Image 1 (spheres, rainbow, N blue to C red):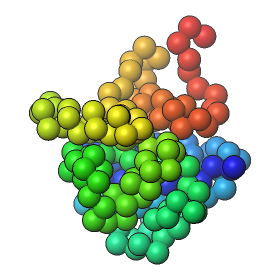
Image 2 (cartoon, helix red, strand yellow):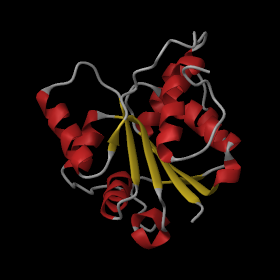
Image 3 (cartoon, one colour):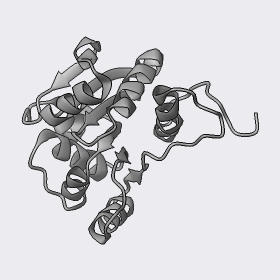
Length: 186
Protein backbone atom coordinates (compact mmCIF):
# COMPACT_ATOMS: atom_id res chain seq x y z
CA UNK A 1 0.00 0.00 0.00
CA UNK A 2 1.31 3.44 -0.88
CA UNK A 3 1.21 5.92 1.98
CA UNK A 4 -1.84 8.05 2.57
CA UNK A 5 -0.95 10.67 5.15
CA UNK A 6 -3.09 12.97 7.24
CA UNK A 7 -1.47 15.92 9.02
CA UNK A 8 -3.57 17.61 11.68
CA UNK A 9 -2.52 20.98 13.05
CA UNK A 10 -4.07 22.22 16.30
CA UNK A 11 -3.88 25.63 17.92
CA UNK A 12 -1.11 24.73 20.35
CA UNK A 13 2.08 26.78 20.15
CA UNK A 14 4.65 25.34 17.75
CA UNK A 15 3.46 26.17 14.23
CA UNK A 16 7.05 25.83 13.05
CA UNK A 17 6.78 22.05 13.59
CA UNK A 18 3.77 21.86 11.25
CA UNK A 19 5.51 24.01 8.65
CA UNK A 20 8.69 21.91 8.69
CA UNK A 21 6.64 18.69 8.55
CA UNK A 22 4.68 19.85 5.50
CA UNK A 23 7.87 21.06 3.78
CA UNK A 24 9.63 17.74 4.39
CA UNK A 25 6.66 15.59 3.35
CA UNK A 26 6.32 17.56 0.11
CA UNK A 27 10.02 16.97 -0.56
CA UNK A 28 9.39 13.23 -0.07
CA UNK A 29 6.30 13.08 -2.29
CA UNK A 30 7.49 9.96 -4.09
CA UNK A 31 6.69 8.06 -0.87
CA UNK A 32 3.01 8.97 -0.59
CA UNK A 33 -0.01 9.08 -2.84
CA UNK A 34 -2.20 11.39 -0.75
CA UNK A 35 -1.39 14.14 1.71
CA UNK A 36 -4.33 15.74 3.48
CA UNK A 37 -4.47 18.41 6.18
CA UNK A 38 -6.90 19.42 8.89
CA UNK A 39 -6.02 22.81 10.36
CA UNK A 40 -8.11 24.46 13.04
CA UNK A 41 -8.87 28.18 12.99
CA UNK A 42 -6.78 28.53 16.15
CA UNK A 43 -3.90 26.82 14.33
CA UNK A 44 -4.13 29.41 11.57
CA UNK A 45 -4.01 32.21 14.14
CA UNK A 46 -1.01 30.64 15.89
CA UNK A 47 0.77 30.17 12.52
CA UNK A 48 0.21 33.83 11.68
CA UNK A 49 1.37 34.94 15.14
CA UNK A 50 4.45 32.71 15.40
CA UNK A 51 5.59 32.61 11.77
CA UNK A 52 4.33 36.01 10.66
CA UNK A 53 2.67 34.79 7.48
CA UNK A 54 -0.22 32.83 5.99
CA UNK A 55 1.95 30.48 3.93
CA UNK A 56 -0.16 27.49 5.00
CA UNK A 57 -2.53 28.65 2.24
CA UNK A 58 0.16 27.96 -0.38
CA UNK A 59 0.79 24.26 0.26
CA UNK A 60 -0.41 21.96 -2.57
CA UNK A 61 -2.31 19.61 -0.25
CA UNK A 62 -5.95 18.73 0.31
CA UNK A 63 -7.41 20.74 3.19
CA UNK A 64 -10.48 19.54 5.06
CA UNK A 65 -12.77 21.44 7.40
CA UNK A 66 -12.78 20.13 10.96
CA UNK A 67 -16.45 19.13 10.65
CA UNK A 68 -16.31 17.54 7.19
CA UNK A 69 -17.17 13.97 8.14
CA UNK A 70 -17.40 13.06 4.44
CA UNK A 71 -13.57 13.30 4.25
CA UNK A 72 -12.12 9.98 3.11
CA UNK A 73 -10.09 9.39 6.29
CA UNK A 74 -13.25 9.51 8.42
CA UNK A 75 -13.53 5.85 7.42
CA UNK A 76 -11.03 3.03 7.61
CA UNK A 77 -11.98 1.94 4.10
CA UNK A 78 -10.01 4.91 2.65
CA UNK A 79 -6.85 3.22 3.99
CA UNK A 80 -5.05 6.28 5.30
CA UNK A 81 -2.17 4.65 7.12
CA UNK A 82 -0.35 7.56 8.80
CA UNK A 83 -1.73 10.41 10.89
CA UNK A 84 0.54 12.99 12.47
CA UNK A 85 -0.90 15.62 14.79
CA UNK A 86 1.54 18.47 15.36
CA UNK A 87 1.48 20.52 17.37
CA UNK A 88 -1.03 18.51 19.37
CA UNK A 89 -2.82 20.40 22.12
CA UNK A 90 -3.60 18.73 25.41
CA UNK A 91 -7.32 19.17 24.69
CA UNK A 92 -6.93 17.23 21.44
CA UNK A 93 -4.88 14.57 23.23
CA UNK A 94 -7.62 14.25 25.86
CA UNK A 95 -10.39 13.87 23.30
CA UNK A 96 -8.39 11.26 21.35
CA UNK A 97 -7.50 9.34 24.53
CA UNK A 98 -11.13 9.21 25.60
CA UNK A 99 -12.64 8.35 22.22
CA UNK A 100 -14.51 11.64 21.87
CA UNK A 101 -14.91 11.90 18.10
CA UNK A 102 -16.57 15.30 18.08
CA UNK A 103 -14.79 16.64 14.99
CA UNK A 104 -12.94 15.31 11.95
CA UNK A 105 -9.53 15.32 13.65
CA UNK A 106 -10.63 13.18 16.58
CA UNK A 107 -12.72 10.92 14.31
CA UNK A 108 -9.71 10.37 12.05
CA UNK A 109 -7.50 9.55 15.05
CA UNK A 110 -10.14 7.09 16.25
CA UNK A 111 -10.16 5.45 12.81
CA UNK A 112 -6.36 5.23 12.68
CA UNK A 113 -6.28 3.59 16.13
CA UNK A 114 -9.07 1.12 15.42
CA UNK A 115 -7.41 0.10 12.14
CA UNK A 116 -4.06 -0.37 13.98
CA UNK A 117 -2.29 2.18 11.79
CA UNK A 118 0.30 4.88 12.72
CA UNK A 119 -0.94 7.71 14.93
CA UNK A 120 1.86 10.08 15.96
CA UNK A 121 1.06 12.90 18.36
CA UNK A 122 3.58 15.75 18.58
CA UNK A 123 2.42 17.02 21.94
CA UNK A 124 3.16 20.57 22.94
CA UNK A 125 2.84 21.49 26.60
CA UNK A 126 5.06 21.98 29.61
CA UNK A 127 4.90 21.00 32.37
CA UNK A 128 2.54 18.02 32.23
CA UNK A 129 -0.14 17.41 34.81
CA UNK A 130 -1.31 13.94 35.79
CA UNK A 131 -4.29 14.13 33.41
CA UNK A 132 -1.91 14.77 30.49
CA UNK A 133 0.29 11.85 31.55
CA UNK A 134 -2.67 9.47 31.90
CA UNK A 135 -4.01 10.54 28.50
CA UNK A 136 -0.56 9.90 26.97
CA UNK A 137 -0.58 6.46 28.60
CA UNK A 138 -4.05 5.69 27.22
CA UNK A 139 -3.08 6.69 23.68
CA UNK A 140 0.15 4.68 23.94
CA UNK A 141 -1.67 1.58 25.21
CA UNK A 142 -4.12 2.01 22.32
CA UNK A 143 -1.31 1.92 19.76
CA UNK A 144 -0.56 5.62 19.29
CA UNK A 145 2.90 7.11 19.58
CA UNK A 146 3.58 10.13 21.76
CA UNK A 147 6.37 12.23 20.30
CA UNK A 148 6.91 15.28 22.52
CA UNK A 149 8.08 18.35 20.68
CA UNK A 150 11.40 18.23 22.52
CA UNK A 151 14.21 19.07 20.11
CA UNK A 152 17.77 17.78 20.20
CA UNK A 153 20.84 19.95 19.81
CA UNK A 154 23.72 17.54 19.10
CA UNK A 155 23.72 18.47 15.40
CA UNK A 156 24.04 22.19 16.30
CA UNK A 157 20.85 23.53 14.68
CA UNK A 158 21.15 27.24 13.87
CA UNK A 159 17.56 28.30 13.08
CA UNK A 160 14.10 27.65 14.52
CA UNK A 161 13.33 25.47 11.49
CA UNK A 162 16.50 23.42 12.00
CA UNK A 163 15.59 22.99 15.68
CA UNK A 164 12.05 21.90 14.76
CA UNK A 165 13.47 19.52 12.15
CA UNK A 166 15.22 17.52 14.87
CA UNK A 167 11.77 16.43 16.07
CA UNK A 168 10.05 16.33 12.68
CA UNK A 169 12.76 14.02 11.35
CA UNK A 170 11.95 11.61 14.19
CA UNK A 171 8.24 11.77 13.33
CA UNK A 172 8.99 10.98 9.69
CA UNK A 173 11.21 8.08 10.76
CA UNK A 174 8.48 6.76 13.08
CA UNK A 175 6.01 6.98 10.20
CA UNK A 176 8.28 4.67 8.19
CA UNK A 177 9.15 7.21 5.52
CA UNK A 178 12.72 7.08 4.26
CA UNK A 179 14.81 10.25 4.39
CA UNK A 180 18.44 11.32 4.30
CA UNK A 181 19.06 13.31 7.49
CA UNK A 182 21.66 13.68 10.23
CA UNK A 183 22.11 10.47 12.18
CA UNK A 184 23.95 10.11 15.46
CA UNK A 185 27.31 8.46 14.93
CA UNK A 186 27.57 9.29 11.21
